[in-house]
Length: 150
Image (cartoon, rainbow, N blue to C red):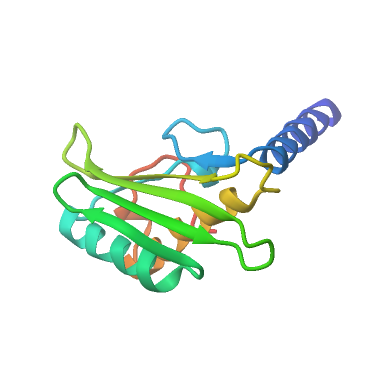
């Protein structure tokens, strides 16, 4: 057990270092970090799309939606950080997966390509949490393994 705890601490330290030293964050169904797994919902596309547009336009402070297209399932936004006045690019993709379920993925990256100190990871996490709340989801609506609403 002591070795197992040490391994977990090392993995946690590596994740923290990566998030603090990168300039972007994106979701992937197989991401090691649960906050970066995106979402697969057992909820119709239209309902998820409307909630994602609402969250990106009204619930995410500092975001400006630049483009949205429900046919391609893409929302493009720009986020302004008040303190440093830096801008980040946000891209949200909402698609039907191979099983006809609604898949949400997003990426956030600093326009300046400078270290973001984990800001974009927090943006991705907050968007997904707000989307979950807007959709009033429960575990049976989210089809990703190891999902937690934290």
